[in-house]
Amino acid sequence: MVSGLNSNALAADNKDEAPAPADTLRADRDLLDLLLRNGVITREQYYELIRGPGRDSADDRRFDDLLDDDDDTGYSPADVRTRRFRVRSEDGRDLFRLRGRFYLDGAGLFLDDNKNTVDDSRDGRGELGRYATIVRSARIGAEGVMYEDFLWRTEVDFRDQEVRLRGAYLEYIRYSPFRIMIGNLKEPGGIEWMTSRNRATFLERGPSNDAYKNNWNPGLRLEYRGYRFNLMTALMSGGEIARDRAVTGGYALSGRASVAPFVRNRTFTHIGFSSSYRVNSYTERIDGRFNRQYQDIRLRTRLGTRAIDGRFIGADDVQDAVDIARYNAEAAVGFGPFSLQGEWTHVGIRRDFFRDDISLGGYYVQASYFLTGESRTYRPERGNFGALIPNRNFRPGFGPGAIELAVRYSNVDSIDKDYDGGQMDHFTAGLNWYLNRETRIMVNYIYLDAVRQNGKRSKGSVVAARVMFEF
Image (cartoon, rainbow, N blue to C red):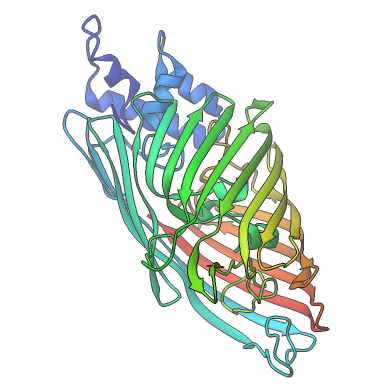
């Protein structure tokens, strides 16, 4: 069976039980959805009521949330949906759904000195625009279920005047909670990286994560989703989807483990660790003997918005990198409307041609609070966060939506030996207004102080905003 099926309808497959009328099933499910959104019942009570006596909770969760990245509450179990369009076959074994998102960003820059920014190594150069507006992301895709055994997805992102593949895979789930995925995938990493950007608290990921994160690449990923833990390992290639026949592609071995020691109602604790070892791509060159010319590695982050494209960490790529090892430790806690989250990242790069090895790293810590009483949707079986559903959607005379305040501090140090990638202290204060599950307005105030060994320094403020929706 597939996502959205009512458990009573599933029970009708048992010959000892008679199926309930479809209208009654739909009314019962809608009532429980309303009670969950209004906080009358907990998520655990919701699944217990949906499940009914004699049913296994893990089995029902499998049917309830096959497709979406988020719990599929708040929608009717109709065969055809319109608000988030999807079509399900009559026997329930096949399902098709469209998906997508759109982010419109704008920002204004207020640096103390905008004529000598750290993002440009040339003397007297580097001035950035004072304000700008961009389409940060515009994605369109489709996903589905085949024969109850396979999930599939394909999605493209239109941004930066490019078309990028962002998720195209086939996933075998017959032995769920063990899953096998192959295609263009996210390489395993920390909690912020493994959480969809649609669920991000700030406009951009923390600078330390943004600079040192893994990427989307073709590969094979194995995952086990336990009740309160997640284990993941992957073998990834190193060339995204582009292919240059002169380049010998690299590869990576990656893994992540997360556990939720305590989860009850709206309280949770989370810890995790991930690591990755990547062998760099290279080309052959002849200069009296055969040598490998390794591909440059880009480890960069910007101001905290892409609307103004300053590269304040990693303006210069790392050259002659033989391999790179990443290590990431993560933790998060939540108490009702309050949550706290942080990650530490270390990167070690081994270099060729008599260059010294270098070590880079950084961390961030953030806190958020919902003024309207909601809490972040933590998913222990995946080790990440799902969609935020307001207690009451924004509608004049009905409800305010959900309002969240958040703060974050991040430090990134990409200076070591002869590599001058820069160092930055980064503060962010954010206001998020969730009009409903699909629509959000975000405003960030950013203060940063970035320096490089070459003497350049940038400090000052950025005000950035985003209007986003998903479907």
